[in-house]
Length: 489
Image (cartoon, rainbow, N blue to C red; front, side, top):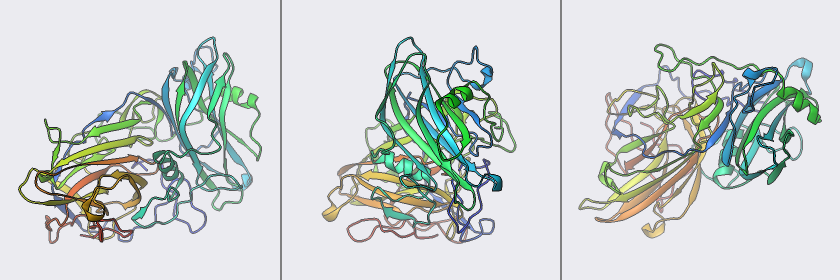
């Protein structure tokens, strides 16, 4: 999760909860030594596309029924301030992430989350689902997709069913172009009529603690302008009647949580959570040397931030957070963390040296920083709390006999300050060229930023103290990544 947001639920051996209960650090973050890996850190080339994404993540913990987010027009409604008045047309996305906590008085209660829409024109609108996924933290009935926060090793091959937490599962399924079977393919929205697109339960019946969460992400395309809203209602095993959603849309907002620090303020900083419509759902970039169509192997060691944000640019000054076209007062003023945003990056490597060069590719989780420090800082030891659980897809790495492999997918679990495990290697003869490609969807419950690193296969140890931070664990055998942790500094 993003720092200074809702406090994490404590670890528990019982069923795990929607807000990632990161396991206790294997070493104390306060006492763990840090080391500097000298290297270049550069801004990530590329940028966000113009596709709008409805980002519904505040409140995370829903305490009262009501409107969570609405792009409807507020004029003429009893609570006009509850609506952002922003039409959605053509391609747009929805990201929604919420938690529900029952009470001893509501042991068998369910929070029902509805996504509703209505045309903004005097004619029906066709709405098509391009791709989408949804998952609970924990299922309480057959047929419910779920993803408990199970402990996983730092690196595993991704078979399409390896994940920990609903945000991890949804991002993984979208990355592999899977679609949740309970999601319809399309909807016809009659003019002047509110249509529930989805009504999804967040149950707590039978759970201990009484806590569950739901993640939902949809990629949509409409034939005309529509208004969309997410609504919350408390109830039992059966979903509320359609008229309940109409009444809630005419009611107030469900209370928001944690007021954001204003943009540009100094001192302590609260990002808050997002409740608005952001500009951008895909970051596409070609990672090259300045002014050239390729990236020299001599640039290694070098890293580029992923999901860089205010006060977390790793010295590059780059903020990748999507700007918000509309949002509610007091909530996050940018999509800090870029939850649900896809990164699609290409690295056209060229060996412009006179010797063979072997490099390794890694996604890593150095200690968060904003000022230039001539490198990246890591913890010496096992690292702190989990900062990233998610899948990455890579292509172009070395396979048997050095031939480039096609698309492969891996699941990563990265802790705070952790040197990342190697995703694989690439070896180029003098004059050789190879294009690498990496894709990921930044998952909910991750803590930004991470970095994408291109490193020598056996980088020299160096540090600002007594010992240096080594590079990622080198792949063994036919240059394939192993399901083991990284080599520690």
